[in-house]
Picture 1 (cartoon, rainbow, N blue to C red):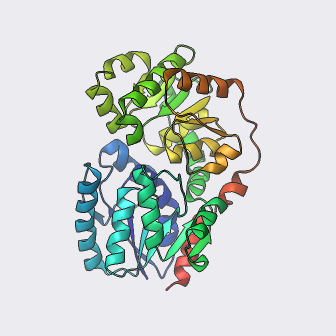
Picture 2 (cartoon, one colour):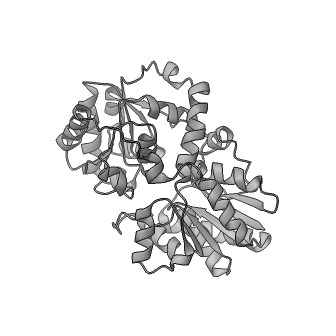
Length: 365
């Protein structure tokens, strides 16, 4: 069996790492890895392949950044060439990026079966590009690997045949278990940044809904600045966010107020997450990693795909509508930390999602 795996962004590298490892250790499966180039600089791409021990891509398409339509269109054109050359039995896609949608659309047009890892997540906000990507991919897919019972229920409600859907758990939990221990041994990021455990807040901001809306951008960074007067705030700066701050004349001011750093590799990011007092983020993956490492989290959005984290009390939604709302949301969470319950395996499987995915794919041959 030949499987073409399509990735393009940081979260997908993390998700693909444990699955690719299992695929390549299975005798009757050949994996062809395609990197679209959606995340293309060293800190957002190359370092992840090195640290996660993902094999070098068989194809690097070098698409780069751009508007949604143009970027997805270029991906469609280049992925189609790969699929026509490789003629795989399955196309495997992850998550909800433009790379996910482009891979699924190409496969569907060429009548190649599609497997979708992290299927069934819904924010129920169709203004989010990610929501459109994940819905369309799920409805094009032939086999859907759902990480949670809520995801399974979403797919059932949308009329997707139950025989296509498999509850396997979360591959990011697989990765967190394995790489969390490695990070503690290898990462020196705390020493490099002169940080002490439990004495800083980690923040990440990258979603277009926050970076491309000046009011929300100002609310987030003004709120973080107010927090930073009490406790240091460390923020690995995504290229999109850096460009937005610079475009609006805010970058220099924020450089003085916050500890802005370049994007970091996966092991360093895990180390920063594990040792932070609190995480403030608009990232779906970082929300879960906070939970995996038992760190309280506030999500700078109106909604989240990971509703079970909010229901458990471990994650709080803080819509960034004002500086005060961001500041008070973080302050209140620090003052009323949630009690960690032994629910990780119950919510996200036992750390064997990758193994189940590969076994299910193997039975489709």
